Length: 480
Image 1 (cartoon, rainbow, N blue to C red):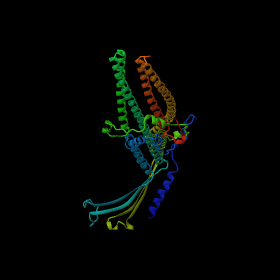
Image 2: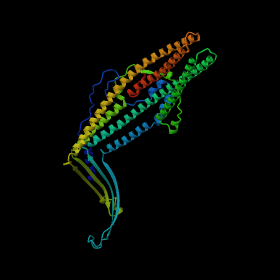
Image 3: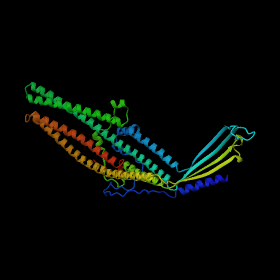
Image 4: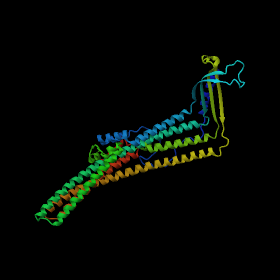
């Protein structure tokens, strides 16, 4: 069995030597010029676990929480991302396995008959023969140049990239579900406002009809009231249409069936005003918050993989060394198969050095370097996009907060204006047109206030998405 020991010793020594050298560049993160303001300093990306659903608890709306859970279970984009992770994991396992010896067990049995007229048989020798084999065959490619190590590095990086992509899909899904839910609650409020306004206009119309019949008002006031009632009817129909479209959009995000999308039944939780009161905004964003942003993580891992691909490609310039060995038993008689006299073994090696490939290897190397440049550009774009997203989200949030405060003041003022206009009309100091104008202005201001609350909620959700999954409570300051 000394041959077998020699084989095993050779394999172990080869595996040790394989880790000594790797051609191709080692990965180094690109140095990027980044602003020094809070929340926009990229330091070291780590695939830290992020609880994308935790931030939404601050709204204290169980219905929103349940919708996010439903989307997590059923959304097709998220299921697709999970399947891609499994595919990348399988590829990574396969790439890593190439770094180890492959061992196959062989069991064979043959029965042959040799021609008696071919002159190959001795006198009295039977033309029939049997052969039995039981052996193990091992083969191993010595990774002197790090080709297999680079392949393993690239596969693991692509797995990490797919895991980060799933985080991107999940954070985007949560943001879309939440923003659509906020739009739904805003549409509910708009429909309720349109319904209230329609009832007011219809009551005004009945009042003007009675006054016209009694001769207490002009035909102009009657027609104006009719026009306002019709306009309110149009607004109500449009609000109802918008609400139905938002419900179907949310049903798709939740991954519901086609029949459920056609006739969506969406639970309701907090009203838009209550959700707005629960709104929190960051007082300051920590400098490393963008490091967990999934698209940046994914882009960097893609760059790591592309860098490792260059090493794989350059390794093709160098010779490949393969070792093969077989050890087992062979006998013409099955009963003698497991017998020391039946032992067989062999040890072989091969070396292949590319001599002429007509520039094929160089083309592969150039292609790998070009893909790395593409990955680098995509990484830089991801970082730039992250800074832009944070800047725009913070800017939009601040602007929407100012709009909301001003809208609340305007609604308060217009309510007083309507009250005074109604008193002037009842006391004969002004026409009915003044009352209608005040009602119209108040309706538009109340509608704008609802939309400003929705817009501010949506803008803060954009901050959640921009920083890669929200922020912790110690890092927030109530907006109210």
